[in-house]
Image 1 (spheres, rainbow, N blue to C red):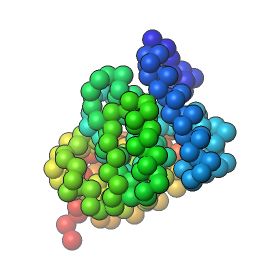
Image 2: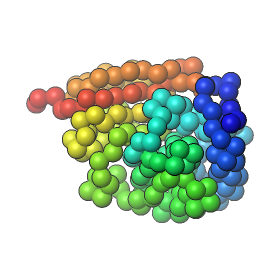
Image 3: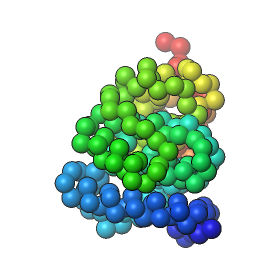
Image 4: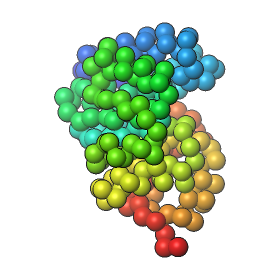
Length: 211
């Protein structure tokens, strides 16, 4: 076993999984020269700003779960979760990405790393009709909390035990205050291992407030 970025969290992976992550980084950096996968200013810190930031999701909810990753874009956190699942030989990630160029990148990343995932090139609003019930839902730098809960609500209706894991920046409390006007949910705030003012919001027991 080898430790993956041990200075950030206690997550160990096999050498094979570490090699898959390394292969993904090389592929990501190649494609990012042609299409906009992340902010260019973060490219020099890809392992910390993107790989580790994504891997903390899996560390919070490990095991062979079925995930839906919304707006997968450059593969964060969805492809990283799928690569980590490959080390367990079970679990799956449904990557939802409407941009065709980014969806092509995601398919290539899956094929070349052996990640346990599939790509759904469609709008998020249409995805619940195609993707079966899931155990967990993730999203990173996609939309405000109220919108993300609306996106995920169809899956919450299928599985009352569904958990959301959502990366949020320093203004996350404003988003929570807005969302509680329309939704009821249980909330756990996990401080980000990468950015002091950011967090991962873990949400469960989602329901609409009576109008």
